[in-house]
Image (cartoon, rainbow, N blue to C red; front, top):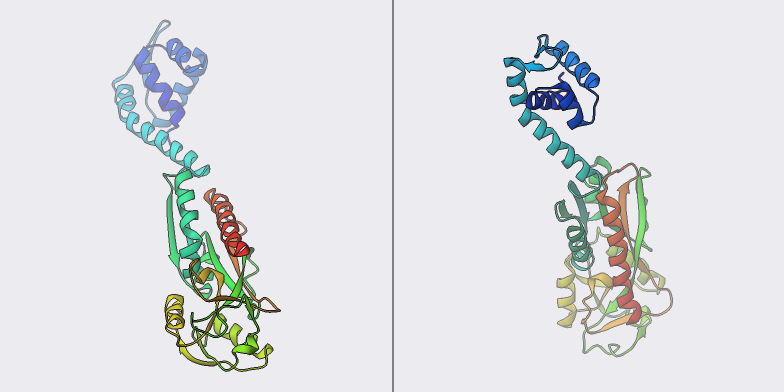
Length: 304
């Protein structure tokens, strides 16, 4: 394989017509230049110069090789610049996944911040429930994923992954504006035992959490409407078709009828999963912005 350093030296020798002049231009001694050219001649199996005491006349082969190597060395220089940019995160890619409510409330600020700081990087976002994105992180298809678990429906994450908690969302009761308890700051869940409930599908962590929360309050909720779309649930509540318990990220800032649960405060915990051995330089940047965005989200309901 031809040595790129030798090819660069060859180009300078061809340009100057002298090993000494080429050495001065490149910072080598004339002897070092001569040795490099000997090694290059051995590599190609043919002489490149007609040597004399005062000059080194380039052969036709040397002229041809110097010309043809110019594009190759330019491409190598470009590759080196790209690699350096990827190493520091100036270029390269970042692949994230998250669930719908975090995509709506947390990820927009994160994506904007990462792209602003690294405008030449390719940033991708996908959406999925925790069970749908964990394998992507394990397989290296995703750099990181936001997932959640409920206090009343805990789960274990793969030991191969780091699982950092970013947010502990309180669960709030959402009532119709005309509900008898809508004006209260806090309610006992037992006071809603006779109400109609609206919830996510039976196979979801949110639904299991509601069943266990109600059981602790001494009743079984009568669930008549189910949807995994929180906007549908909120709309059904606003139409006085029932009440619901929703995590804070799923409730818009201007949502009426939000009531805190009295006593035990259940939470949905948002965590970021990533591989311990992931060396993507963009990942620490994303993790920093994720933490900041989640802190900002938490401050909204802490002040309310």
